[in-house]
Amino acid sequence: MGFAVAGLREPRVLDDAGLYNRGVNVPNPRTTVKVFATTGMDDLGKGVENEMRCRLADHPDYAVEAGELSVSKFSNENIEVQISNVRDHLVLVLHTQVPPVSDGLIQLFALLDAINNAHPRQVFLVFPYMPYSRSDRKNRPRISVMGQRLPEILNRVLGVHRVMLLAPHDPHIKQYFIPTADEVPVLPMLVDFIRREYLSRWAREDCAIVFADSAAAKRFEEVPSVLGLDPAYIYKSRIDHSESPTVKAITGRVDGRHCFIVDDEILTGNTVMRDAAILKEQGAASVHVLGVHGVLADQRLSVEELMAKLSESDVDEFVVTDSIPLGDKVRLMNGKLTVIPIAPLLGETCKRLILGESLSVLHRMGV
Image (cartoon, rainbow, N blue to C red; front, side):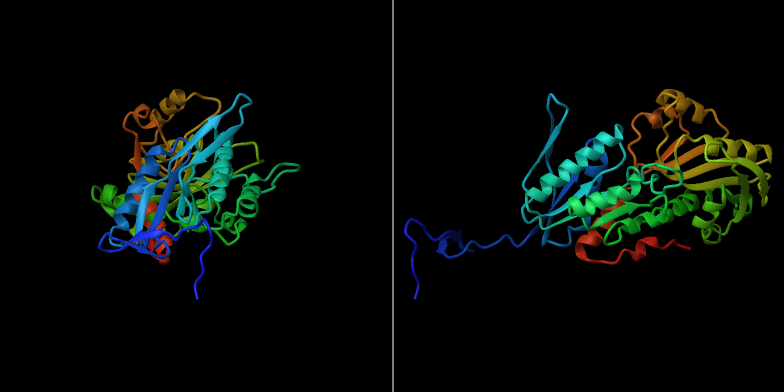
């Protein structure tokens, strides 16, 4: 036996014929995916949004939309973030290292807080480049370790439990997140670039993969065999933490060869510029440096000065992804800086996460 509550009416919904029927509101069968990007990531955020929309086109249960946010700064320099509706939505948040880095991190915290307050179904956080990721070890007395504290804040305070890291500097940083963060690999893209852009021009016997140090040799050890190239090694020693390493020896044939240095990050570029000069002294035909993350910053130099320094170096070409927005750096490098877009890779990764598909296939390098 039914009953009625005074003052309340049962909701009315449209049936398939467009007529009102009495009953409970029918929920929208589509799942909305909202994509948010913090300040300075407009191009990458839009690119990932478009890639996801294309990849989910065959899945009509999902609709991809841009997440709108506004950032207000008050007279006391505190900020406030307001977002569009995300109730019961899947939310994807993109954040990378954009100057001023620490201000951007506070904006990320405020954005995640605003999202949590709006009751989303689930939140995915993607770091194309995670700020403070290199500050992950207490290797000197009485120093901060923000690379470890940041995951704790995101997990315990802001409740983020699905995190993706694009080629982190040290893979162990994934384990600071609970559950462990997913790694988005970029090495297959660099290998494909070498195969497509260089090995189509030069014979394999005229090329070599050069490992700039022991860490690179361990991290990228499979690259020479995958590409069918000979490896070469630059052996270095470092007296203490403050001094630049000294080259002790080079093993492997580099004379007359096109040398490819692969690394995860290019910061100031000073190390690879020295390595390129030494390789040229040993007779290298050309030196190409491929790095996942192009930080390309030196606090002692302006952007224009650093770009001029890099473009005048013995490095014939720098190749990086746009995991960190490059702005005018491409133009200032006078043709020496090539950028590989990562939006397709991130779009595919996010699509797989949303659909519950494996990410292992992304780690495979073609033969």
